[in-house]
Length: 453
Image (cartoon, rainbow, N blue to C red; front, side, top):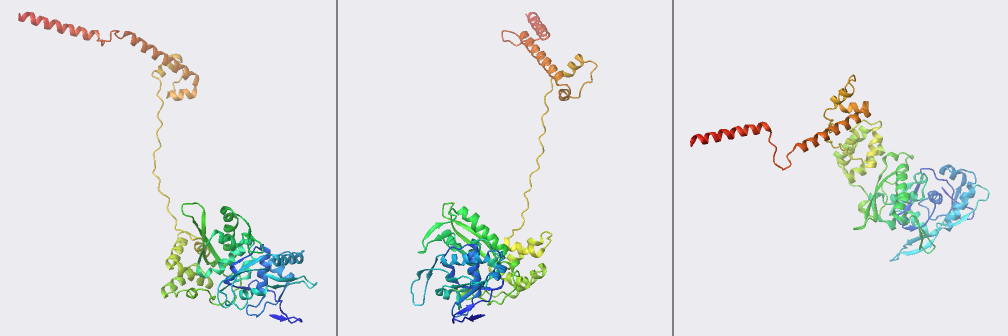
């Protein structure tokens, strides 16, 4: 509870719990600033200490000991670190496109998160005060707001994760959000600005570095530590490989719904699109199907309620398809497997294409030299003749080589002898037996002719 200090100023000194709720107007995400992870955690810790319905910010007294216990920081030199962190936030530029009642166009306001920082007086507290003009974004917010539990943000280690988590919570109601790469850099603090709001430095300028060092690690950490389950897709410029924009898909992380003790939150935040404030009613058949899935996989009541967001956006068939994938094989923990199937969008297993069985090609046997067995028997009469010439080559390669040379030489000699015996005039050589038969036939013909005369 807020108290009134002796000087009449409102003071907030009740330290927030891990489950404390941080309330912010949607417009708070349209700001430019660059803070480290530790600085962001102190800022959110301070925002969680103020009462959302208070009329003024008042002074916020942060207990060094309680802050260390909640954030898991070591107490050694923590006061000095906390003081330096608060002073750094006080000096960091904050630029907002601010709109006040009666204004037709937003004006760019240059300021800082903290109006002042008082060092501790030995009581173990650091006193800070939020800049007064931020009241419309943090106090008495009844329209166009979002909220999240402080513990989820404190569990994140990366400065990009904390900024992206808040952005995604702001657009959680819409389920999807697309923004250009340049817009994304501003939203997650990947750019550094001066006090005029001008960009003076772009961190991770190449998109591949922004993706590998900021976007992907942040998404993995958010999915692991918070109440959101997030994925994203990229859209490239026409006829180009360069990424133009990124689309985030935002769901409830059913595995982490009970990570923090439940707190009483409004059933539905006041969002800027009245038509999107309530999910469409689900019919009885869909509710029965959700109840059956809950019972089959042993889900809790909060997880069952979280399934409704999937049923509204994707349809009950989507959930039933994921359930069938989980059933397709034994699982050690069916509840965890089903939640993972939703989170990672598991696809049905595809059978491996059947490969045609091809018979191994039979190796052609090397042609054996003709007469090699006779050669071996002639030169080595008492030797046992192998079954094949290849075996002879393996057993006694020198003998096989000598055999091959001799047989090749013999073959060459035979060929030369045949050539010498062939007629030199090119006429076909006729065997003597055929010639004798031809002559006898001629004599018989001549004899027959003489007799006819």
